[in-house]
Image 1 (tube, helix red, strand yellow):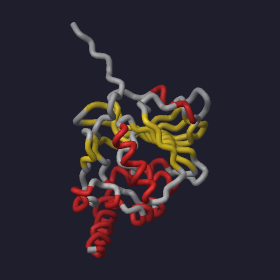
Image 2 (cartoon, rainbow, N blue to C red):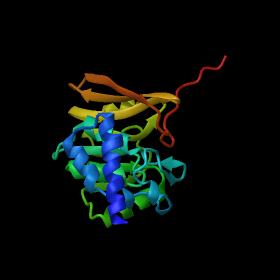
Image 3 (cartoon, rainbow, N blue to C red):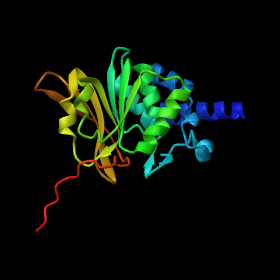
Image 4 (tube, rainbow, N blue to C red):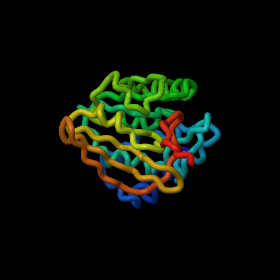
Length: 219
């Protein structure tokens, strides 16, 4: 069984992640060592390495492995970085972020998922993470400024308030828009007033709970 898991992990990295232009050796090594199968709900263990978004309950799902890899590569997290993650989910991306950063503040709006993530991270002795319950879609200024902000789901509208919590030279990854086509973007804070926004790729991700909605005009 163990060798089957290792083969599945190897195939995930070679066939899904590398082929999506994730070639950063730090990221690939992390995906080999942080056990994804330990974070998925037990009934989905057999799908832990599949190219899909695995349901984790409460209408939420894990990001696909290639999306996790792409996010980590784009953010280029450094060992001194303070990271804000919006949408803890089951804590797998949190664990990956924690392995690269100095400290991760992760916010989850669903108390049951917060508890799941807390147990998952504790089981792997990951201690440089602060988990909190709340709606972080506005950027969770409490512990800012942050070197890195990452949204674990999509937002219908761009989170302008969240980018204000970036440190100078900080990076923010966010997917915005509405299905079927959303934009994955990287925002860099150049100075107190200036931000640089780059469109990375098109995708479609589940929307974060209680995300701000675009204004609808009625005639």
